[in-house]
Amino acid sequence: AQTVTQSQPEMSVQEAETVTLSCTYDTSENNYYLFWYKQPPSRQMILVIRQEAYKQQNATENRFSVNFQKAAKSFSLKISDSQLGDTAMYFCALVSGTYKYIFGTGTRLKVLA
Amino acid sequence: NAGVTQTPKFQVLKTGQSMTLQCAQDMNHEYMSWYRQDPGMGLRLIHYSVGAGITDQGEVPNGYNVSRSTTEDFPLRLLSAAPSQTSVYFCASSIVRGGLNEQFFGPGTRLTVL
View 1 (cartoon, each protein chain N blue to C red):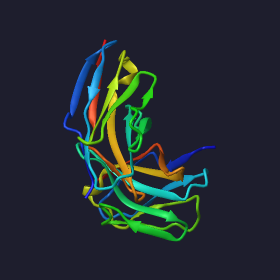
View 2: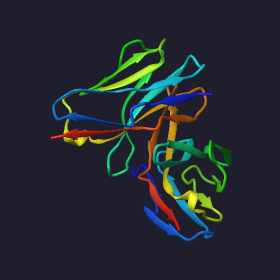
View 3: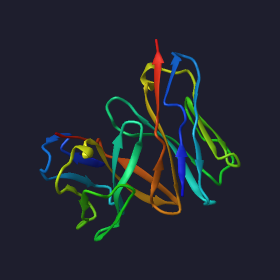
View 4: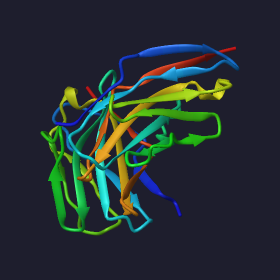
């Protein structure tokens, strides 16, 4: 069975600082994708960043980057220069082989002014 | 393109009532799915469809029915609502491109069952 674990239910960070959200996963597949989704208070699920398992290079999208450790099955999200608008729930997700996405339980991030 | 649309945005039901949550997408995506989101539990898959006329159960299918008569629409039916079905429901559609199955979400429906 595939699993995704987010062990930090809540985190906070000062504005302009850097924060890292953790995610570990388990799958027996060789080809898979990992995602980070942001869910602000509006409830909309927004794709932040994705990583293909076959790519060794870590994905980056502006202030968002990942640390993908395939052997350790770890996929952390780093947010640099945190902004008040980054306050949201963040979900890690895995999809492989089949169509089904597996989501973690989420980390609630609060950016403090 | 409107993307993925869901109606209604909010709904209150009494125990035992039935209702249908509507979901539509205009991106010609093959895959559509329904999730429920509960506090501390992330998103859990209820039902999914890989094309018109084809549906299958996800992780938490009990109490829900789906059908997929067209590519665009994927309604979720609650036959006899129970308080345990109080949740936020998300519909999503996706297409496989270059091996990547990227999912697009609707805005969600907050359902309360009294």
